[in-house]
Image (cartoon, rainbow, N blue to C red; front, side, top):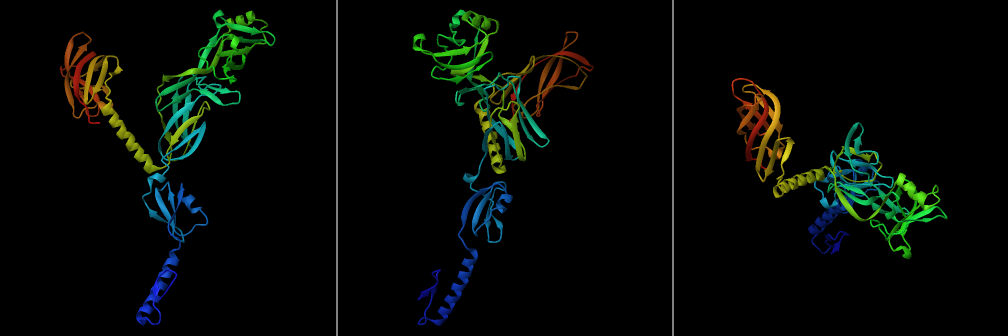
Length: 435
């Protein structure tokens, strides 16, 4: 019995003729079909857009690419690309991309990206005012303003960073690795002169300096600073400051110069520390492309998303995490939108305490809105409660208060005439919306 190259049997002469004829026809048909299809399925990788897919040259039958913008796989059928599946392996999806630069141009979708960090520079970031972070596309612009003390960076003599301040947006902290030291020429600073080259140095370690570092380019407001290095053993081991002042010929004149115009030095600290800062990590990203930069030219670390399916998934995860956090960590602190008007939430229960000064005329049967509560403080149904109103004659009138489902806190009175109110008093508790 013979066979084709596809291992399909063909009967020989001594076999039954009908079977032999059938086998030859079957072999020919299968061979044509297999040749028509060509190569087996081969996954080749990812491209950003359909335009990128169509630009690929030397494509073979059966090759598959993932198109990230479409959230689909496409296969080449010998003539063109056809959709292969609408589901893709999430392990192959680039969820987001982190960029680290002072000027970022990225392919994005409409949504919210994340700023992770903003780094200090040797000349300082924020030395002249607020730091502005700009996100823009064509005529659309979003602005984030950060106010803080300047952020610095200290390098060694070959340009490597050894200390750098930065804002950690995720934790809402400023991490300080650089610090200020002020020298005013006082005797406790222990300055020593080397008058051969107008050089002056401190003869004892400066406690806050990192003593293991040599040849550090620090930042000084007044003098050319040669370096920061370990002092000789005869003076103790530790970090010392070396400066030169060509206008001073002796130690007395140098110290007098410091006294009238103190030297401020920015140095690498032995121990870093943190400060709180009011900043959120969200940054607007636009459909198609987003440009992000800042007015200080500081280096940014930004995470941007270019896949809609993953962006929606991440958004839902963040919302769920926020709700879990509210359950596990309820806000028990009083919120006071105005003096004498405060409220708080403990678990599901909201407490509101009002001794609130106003100057409003309330007509009979009309409502005066005092405040609108955030969504997590709103009730499941209308809450009604009594209110004590003090009028301009310093007498008290009973009124009615409501907290509505939309968060509106309002008051009214039913005396039959208008009342000019200068103080509102009430206390109310209720269950908030499920959140």
